[in-house]
Image (cartoon, rainbow, N blue to C red; front, top):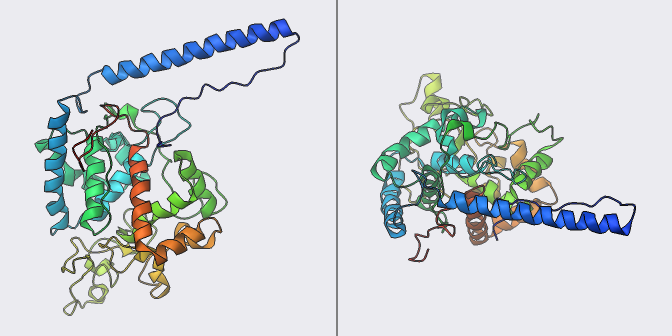
Length: 373
């Protein structure tokens, strides 16, 4: 069972009573009220599942499934082309789902994979700097396949981006229901930070990571697996601000741009090769990556390439915690030694992330990796 599913708690703790009679009356009253609450919640859930939603899987399920497959088939060459937008589409999917708070019982206030990141109110959160570009990439696909919810399209693009970079196929389910208005966006502050001081007042990076991910229902092994997404992508001065490397080739590292241009040179800048297929070109240059081949989804992140090139590769406090904390370190080492294990665990954790806070219609979702739904 996916622990990211929305859960409503009906547990109560009884108070001491003065007599057996009053205790029994209280128990009967409590049982009735609990039963009524369960019934009310169930009816509410069923009603919401039957309520039409303009951007959810309310059309014929097989038609929706066909649209998902067709969209995926078009996303794959687009992502793999000259744009090389794998990292930003993966980040967009992560940030839409990563706002989930398991302690909040009501949808969509609980956050999660509900497409709310398409609204300016959420895009303007500090952690989402630069993600407007990711949405721009997806707008033509949504225009062509308007039946698809934004929540589904964002997660589909993230899964396809992983596969296009040489990573595992992520056999998630679809049929997510979208939020309707910006007022349904989660409050800012649910996504993990990179460096102290942390917004949640955590004393160290390991504690911060656990507070953020445990809120979503993830354990230590899943935290390390999901962190492996940093095997692709870069950070920018203009976005997260955790590095001085910014937009453009002259503001990049030797792995992401042409630093020689900053000194007035650049004529001898070598072609950048970061893709798993060995093709030249990286799209927009600049920024600072965690790995040398930052368009290749593999287990390089866990091999700590930054040790060999501390000036050219990024490694933050939250990265360091994964191989220095006693709870995280065994998983980090296992993934460094076994890429297959990383791929398997990452795919499983990413599917779980993609369902955090999601409401599906039909309730069991829609698969596109086979004909079942």
